[in-house]
Image 1: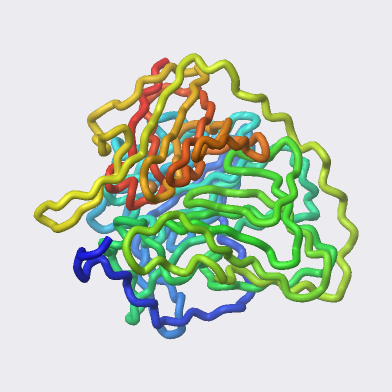
Image 2: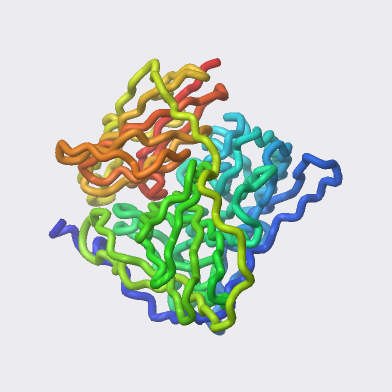
Length: 468
Ligand SMILES: [Cu+2]
């Protein structure tokens, strides 16, 4: 990667310090304006807003209803959802994509369905039984997704089951990770060549918009956390120092049974539902570990040693709480695929009028909104093989459904996942092949793409047209 000029140098480390250790704030909630049971009706306005991340500095951002992350949406299985999106982003089209949710194709904020600035459009969909999970929402307009997300547009959408097997005494705390880069004047700098190659990695990983916020818990507390990687491109390998973690759910809801874990990898767009047991007094930190996802050029950011959250576990014992059930819910295995498909990720490097430019391809092609890449049939199980022949990891996401990972293969070695789970995003490490089973139940065009948003923007995306 030598000889590419000054453009390729990493941006200097931000000199702007952010306050740490403030009490973890709850996310604001999107209020349900409907009075009819089973209906969730609200409005989300994307607009220019101002946040104060650092003392004395106003940062112009884009927010949903004025905040970033956007308000937490919480609905219940069986609900009808009607959310009016008001696009008030100056001079830019946008959409809202309901990441991971089982919504009709024409309600899913595809880049083919832009909402122009100044326009309102209502997204309507039903949340079927069994759809409880940790979803999120973000823009998906053509060519502008990466920028609109790093400027602040992303929020969590939790669908609760009618009866939750997780004890209510564990709480349900949503932690949305975003990645902030702040210039000395408080503004958000635009993307550089390095950002376009690797995806934008910022200077500060924030939790619900705060740097290393704090919470205090009595010892013996069991707490449920839903972790969301809403960064453009930051891989988060995480551990809680001195507090055991139990994984209870993934993108698309609960696992069959709880699984103990030492550390976890949350690649861009992935979510995990965890129980953390604070079983001895003292400080506990949620911190990052090293993870090499393949970095192009100089200036690989430090992955390890970032403290994202600090819990102060007090001497006071917690009230006893019920144990976690041994079984959470059944997950029927997807089986007997009627078709197998192969998607090969590659990167290209070419000289053009703008200098050296990278291309990110699926099966040799960059995204074209007017091209259908794959035709599938609604209701049929398919085996998808995602082959990463590139030099970087690429987290693969498909719209409109949840899939099951069958196996990972790298260097001739096959590895099975640690548990059966519903997922909509899976990291495909460089040199790795991931095989997954999926079924699209609703007809219409669906996107599949790398969720490093700069890679998506540069073409690592395709369309599967699901036919009735
Ligand atoms: Cu990628």
